[in-house]
Length: 426
Ligand code: AMP
Ligand code: MG
Figure 1 (cartoon, rainbow, N blue to C red):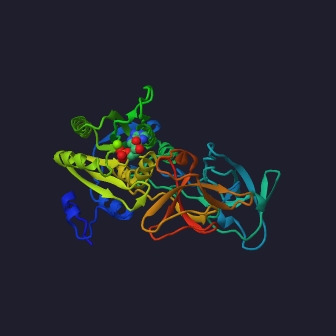
Figure 2 (figure 1 turned 90 degrees about the horizontal axis):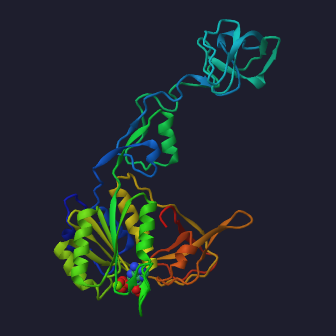
Figure 3 (figure 1 turned 30 degrees about the horizontal axis):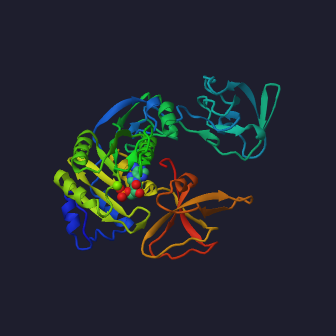
């Protein structure tokens, strides 16, 4: 095994003993890519309302205690524990009330109780709350039995979060919960990383964009549209550079332009055998790029490298392969570059598969699955129809990948399989 070091170059990687670009396991490719990912440094201040899906670049420190005051966890009576009897009842005068937003204010004197509602501020000198159900109130007095503990039903100021504590950590993506939490602390602005800029283009003489009429043998470009959707959904700046014809000079110009304006360049098509050679030479002139055949289906050809300071992902041309490789390699890498830390793995778990699955050992397969729940509440998965890497409908029908590991062969109906939920990217 090679030991990852921060100074390692792509060239060092390709010279390592266990490096075989023609049979690259999925995990190994992921791990190699991860060695070269340095998060963005640039940050900006944004209002919390505009911060959804952005990534926090600075810890948010709580300027206040949460809760702000000692307060009641129950509807009941606030009193002095010393007034209660270990055995037998005691009757106290109801001196007033403390409701949420309307505190009692004065100290509670011996022999007194204050009616208190959930969230009501604990009056000074009181130290215990007796819940309403354990009391009898009549004519301005309340009678309370034995068996209570001092400080019961009391929520302490700062119990959830104390002044000066980290409320939200740097590296966290901001979801509605984090935005609400910042607002609950009275924080209106947060420091986030600037948006990751991702330029992308399609390559292929056969491709036309929507709005044009395909000529003989031409097809509509779909990859640029799925890539645009995936990037936008993740909150990145998606820079669409169009379709580039299979002409070395045009492709070279497109690469140079993309790398100059973006943090990441993504292409689809043109990295399969045959086409790879001229692209290989060109990219190695512009930067340093590794070309792999991943032991996976779909999505075998994949290129990764650097062009100038930009990271480059060369995805296969087939529409399903594009989405699978984006999901399995590009997603995590982009989140890391964008500053997210940690990047948790997508939820993966085992369920029974009700379909028979065809699978040859020797590669990891990402079949498209539909997870559903039966009338008894039990979950299972079935495969979408045809699994060809050009059939984008399989991605549209699916809500998960069925991940079949390298050594796995055919799967009989009813066997347990691993599924990965497609969330937020597809
Ligand atoms: P390639 O990797 O360029 O050989 O492409 C593999 C297959 O994917 C071919 O059938 C291409 O026509 C198809 N393909 C490549 N790029 C796109 C695209 N942007 N949209 C739809 N299909 C594509
Ligand atoms: Mg092509």
